[in-house]
Length: 477
Image 1 (cartoon, rainbow, N blue to C red):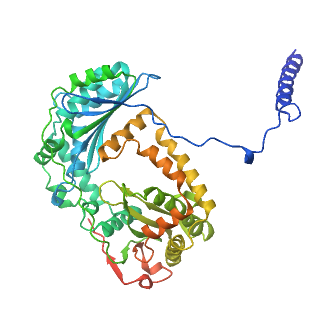
Image 2 (cartoon, one colour):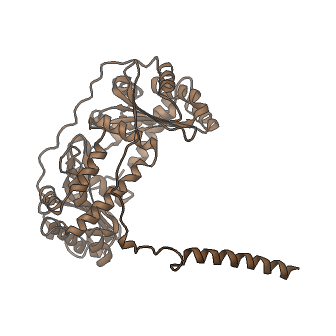
Image 3 (cartoon, rainbow, N blue to C red):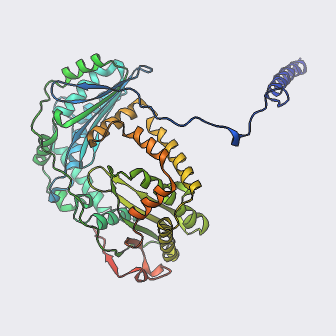
């Protein structure tokens, strides 16, 4: 019986296999073209249609309806600004305490329990120049979660125990901030480039210890008003439905006169310097570069492609191939060229390598920058970089929530809402000449700030060969 059953199963399987082979056989099916002969339509980027919304209290933003699943996402971005330098750390403390301290009605622990029961999520985070409130919940729980969310925006309690808890955490973070060489390298390099500009500021024990609850309340009162915010909504709601719900939930959030200072411009670029910070490690963390560009720079797209070829394109980039793949000198090697919407970003070419290859790695990084400013990339390299870079942009639009957040960010930055679509068209038109021109204009291989973190006694060459060495002494907290 068992033999007959197995025979039958094998016969059925064999029959299915024969049918599959027949359908897949080149002799029975149309001959497929070789992959290299395939052609594809040009990639287009179409942003889902967003609806403008505006509340009577001055809060305005965007809605993208998405009725596929019963979920709602809401984000509210509030514009803020740096505190005085002696109180640096205020914004980060306030954001944490708002979320974890809760309100009089919803203290932090009670708030967390309720959200866990509802399988909802409420976050408060940001940087010095913005604070973001966000929530995600099931459509059926929207009235409940929206009431909690609105209470958190309008009535943060700033309880003293949470202020002290965050203060202690921040002080511990400062105490441990020199434990990781990668963190040290990024921080010190940023300070070398930005100097006294707020972009180069760091918290200190004194600035954190001096913060009070009144400082947090003052920070909130200065900026957290609906006419100084942008809202974005996506999910299973209609415009009339969500506007009515928001009008009711945020009725007590009143507009006010708000002054957000302008981020200062960077000082003129400093002369090239060679810097060293001692850490008792067997590796060398190398960073070299200068200030980047403004986000509104007309050459931004060309700079992005230039950097993609230089060191931002993962394993296909020059720096990665030369330093890591060909020479085997680095655990990691890359470059970043950032654009800032207010001042200027940062250009950094970096490598993490064994200490006895430090000098060689520095030289290769310098050579790749000069190569980019000299002969530059080939037409094929530019074409491949543009295709790869443009195709990667689709991952920024995987969900309606991502699209809404992008619109909120664009409104906050004061940029046209169709900037992503414009960028795609700009990338498509870039030529080899454009990339070479951008390299020569925005890369300064002979005017670099160099920083090495490690133990110079293990280096293959003295750093003095790259210029007079300025030693940075790391604080011992």
